[in-house]
Structure formats: C-alpha cells, structure tokens
Image (spheres, helix red, strand yellow):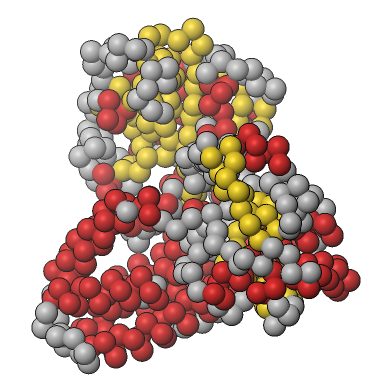
Length: 608
C-alpha cells in the first residue's frame, strides 16, 4: 500500500465520521514569531481548542507537512527524520475517548491491515493532579477483545507517568493539557512481542500514533481544572505508518524516501546498506533534501537568519555528506527532480517550482564549495604557522575557519588526521564544542553591542551601498507599487543584493525607470540625515518599517532630502549612511535579477 493510499484511507474514514478537511498550510507560521516552522498539525488550531468556533465545525481532519529541526542530530538511524507529514483529526468539544479510540484502532487494523497482535497501547498512570486514565484502558481492552486479544495491563497496555503520557503546550496558567494514549507497533522478531514494555525495548517498537485528550486547564495554583469543552487531538506520522504498513524496518526504504536512495545509488555506484558510513550519508542526504525542498517550496531562501539559516544548514550539511559519496557538485540538480516526481500526488504545484528551487540550491552549493576551497587554502597556510602540538591552538583555528568561511570542524578533523596531527577525534570535538559554548556565552553577553542595521563592517563602500538600498527601495515602490516591501539585503564592497515582495520579473523598461529615479536623486546631491522620533511621531511621518522589529519608545529615522516632510525616502534604520548622495556618484546600475521564492524577487546592483 502506498503512502498516498494510506492517507486517502485515513481522510475517507474520518470524513465518513463527519470531519471536514482543513488545508495543509505553509511551513512558515503566520502570527507566531516564537516558532520557526509549523511542527505539528495542531499548530493552527490552538484558538479553537480553547473554545473559539471553527468555521468548518467541531470535527476536523488533515495532513500537515512539518519540520522539527531539533531532531537533526538523530537523523542517520532507521527511523528519525526532520521533515514529515502529520495526519491529524480533532474534536472541538464534540466526541471524546469512546469514539476516538475505536475509530483509530479500526483504521489501523481494518483499513491498513496491520496485525492487531503487534499493536500496543500506553496510557496516563495518574498523579496528584489528575487520576489514572482508566476510561481509556477499558475502551482499548474492548477494542482488542473484538480481535480475540485479552489486552491485560502490563502485557498489552502500559501506564506511564506525566513525562510520557501527558500533553500540555506550556506551563503557564490557562494552558490546556490532558492525558494521552500512544499507539506502538512491534517490529521485533520475538513473536508478537507480547509482554514487552515499549519503554524498555525502544528499538523493537515504533510509535505510530498519539491520542491526546485535552480535558484540563492549568490554574493559578499549579493544579489542573476540568474543562467544560473536552477536545481530542490525534497525530500520526505518515512516514512512520508507511514503514509498518509496507513491512519495512527502515523508514528510508518506504516510498517516502527510497526513490532518493535509489537515485543516490545510481549516481555513486554505492549500495545503500553496504556499510555504516554510506548508509548514514544516504539517509542524511535523503532527509535533508526532502526537508529543504519543502522549505523552498514554501518561499524560504538561504540566509544567515531564522528560517533561511535552517535551509542553509540543510543544504550545506548535504554537501558535506555528498562528498563522502564522491558527489562534489550539483547535488540539488540531481535530486530535486526526483523529489518533485515522488511527491506530485500531494503537491502538484511542486513540479512548476522545481526549476526555481533547483537553481536556488545550486547557487547555495556553489557558495559553499567556494567557501570550502578558501577554508582549505587558509587551513593549510595556518597549519604551517601554528604549533600543531598545541590542542588549544588547533581548536581555535578550527573555530576561526568555521566563523570566517563556514568550514566545518569535521573537515578540519579529517585534514588533521590525513596529516597525522591527531588521532583522538573524540577528544578534539569535545574541546571544540566547549570552545563554541564559551564563545556563544560571550556573544550573548555582548549582544547589546551588536551593530544596528546588520552590516558586516563600516567601510566606505559598504556604507555607500547601504544608503543605496534606501534609494532602491523607494524607486521600486514608485515603479512597481506600494505592495513592494523589503525582505532583506546583503551588502559587500562589490555590490548590493536586495530582496523584495513582487510576483513578476522586472522588464527592461521597469529596470530603466528604477535606475533613472535613483540616479536623478544622486545627480541632485540630496543630503542624508536622521532624526530621533517617538514611535507615534515616526509612524505619522510615513517612515517605512517592514521587519516586525520590537522598537523602543524612540526610533531613528533616516531621510533623504532637505527635510523630513519633503524627503524622497524615509525609513526606520540604525545606519550608518553617507552624508550626501553625491558620495554615490556617478550612477547605480541593476545588473541581475532572479526569483528567490513565491512572490519574492531579488535584484543585484553596483555603483559605477
């Protein structure tokens, strides 16, 4: 049974029970700056779980693509992934345990054909805040009894404490919470595993679903009160369910990943399970490429901040492991088409975005390869100058190379081993991590000194280009429309790069008009000044601010022109800027443009 069929059967069962399907939303959450990515199906439903009416009713079902980047170090074994699809169903104060538990067990056993003798359940054992979930135990026993199984507690059903079988979103008063009943499938070879405790034999059991019963609200006294509206929140990972339905013991052998593995075998001549290093590298590449494709599909572009930083980490980590398989370039061009074809049933529009995503990834790969080349050159040069018997000096060098070039410490370690400079990689990595931790602590303490505006330095040319971005922003809004908003910029001594909201490619006439507006302002030698204003005054002045920053009561507004009232450009900005546009002379030229995601354009410009 394919993953598509698994999902279709799930949606059909719950629609039969009166559920309405809600959309598979963008991975970048709206309205929650504390969360980088949607990490569960319930994320958009929090207001409705608290009592607000959902426009589609009280019974909902969906599949939601999700990313949990915190699991990245676990990827490489046979079951962990960072990107997955969560199948979910919800009751918003409607049905409860007596309906949900039979429905979901019937789905697994009758719709998917899983062996009921290999299914196991866990429940909340109770504590001083909430009683043992005996209701779920009795319901589950009746379900198993339908299939001729005497589901005894301690043999088929296991009761665990708050750490394992209690869900709550946070620990503040007013937060929702409640007991959960997890579902496990036995993958071991010892019969059906009867009597084995899933918590004691974790490698032999796989969690395939979790029923959360939100029936409490946290009070001010650190206790919990019963809710008048009791909710159900079920979540089951499609990829994990496919593993057991397709009778695999390795999630990367399911149809969610195996086409990528097969492509890697074809490209490298290696067999997937030939040895531990090859297997781990292929698993990491398959997971990361799929996750990166999801992010790019949802408009994320590589950068050094937030979601863009995570995408960059994915892509650069893939390059590192691809080198272990002797793939030294164009990894994205080789694999993105495979992923697009593999997921066309779920994301038909992905094929249209394939070319743009591939180009985006190729450019990032090229940047990383260039950084690696520079890092390797600098590494060899520095190894001739430092005391290679000094472990601290080696660690500091490794860190500098990573900070300056993005040169991974693992590559540094390999180079040292090749030169017989160290044999204790574990000790080196421990020292390196300790050094990184100390540096991070120091950086946090000095965070208040961080340069406002995000520039790397204060050189004259960088300052010129920073000022030019204000002119570019102003001119683009004049020619394309007020929908244009700055998404980000990158400035070097050689050029500026500017990202902004706009759907279509700029034609030659639009580019000429933008350049003309900018160069006319430069020709007029307009002054550049700033003024400190209250947030209210700054807002009334019409100064632009698009980055959702948390500003203080006083903000700095830079304006280009003879006065704030008549300025051609005014924006909240920390600076620095030139004193007069004459310093930008003679002209600015746009020399390149590209798409970097849905509704986001990027232009490159130089001062000549």
